[in-house]
Image 1 (spheres, rainbow, N blue to C red):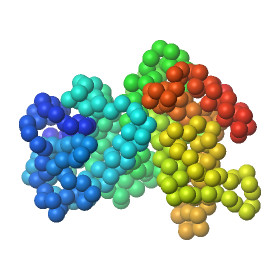
Image 2 (tube, helix red, strand yellow):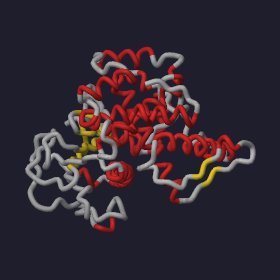
Image 3 (cartoon, rainbow, N blue to C red):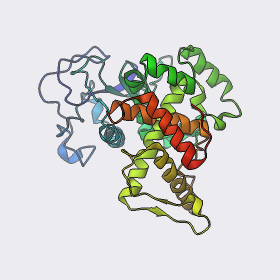
Length: 350
């Protein structure tokens, strides 16, 4: 086995029969934890069941599950996963299980086995045909920080992994139609470029020097699929953070300039793209300034260039069209970009 522990989630319900990639069939009946309720990794949840069915699970290695070091990891992973699903539900995006649809969404949470041969590939966080794999090591703060520094990333979180990987799943559901693909390619590039060699080039040579002018992150330069996934993740960051700010009644009214003022008194999950940007830029300007006052890194260390805002507008239009709030995705995208240009003066081009 290349992994120490494997958890499979089919959401919601995990109805048998189902077989994971180890080839082990799920048992029938209720899926329960081998932990007592006192030791539940998530005190906010009953680990045997939930009202929504989002916590279904199976452990292929019950004895090894008792490793105390993984309990805190499990809790962190669950918190991030539930935040992901909160946004998916708020956006009214379709969420189907493997029991409901053979192409439905599922999760593998895997841990490397330090006892196995070093020749066996390490667990890689990623997405394949609806299965999102998360390396449990990403729930370890020190290890995740080590990887962030090694990769030269300004930001690396469990929630970011979930939001990025789920984008690959939804790309197939909401972007891969012929009409939408034409618009996608005009903004992100041609996804038919060979993916494997593209990643190899990125890891060998890195991103071009001018990447901040066109991409949200350096990794987004690797391939159009990764550009879309990075943009999708940041769209989720923006909307969810703005909603939190709205619930706290935050108002940004700096004394130095009214150009970075914002009153966040709307529902970001239902708002137009131009309104999101108008609120997001002042909010992050203020939050970054607060962090610097504490000697901390910026909360949001990214630049929303005009091409990046165009890509965010594409994601926004796709999500709202899939949710039924917009009849024509392409027309909605053009209207969104036109609104951005009129309100912010940004000369975006579709």
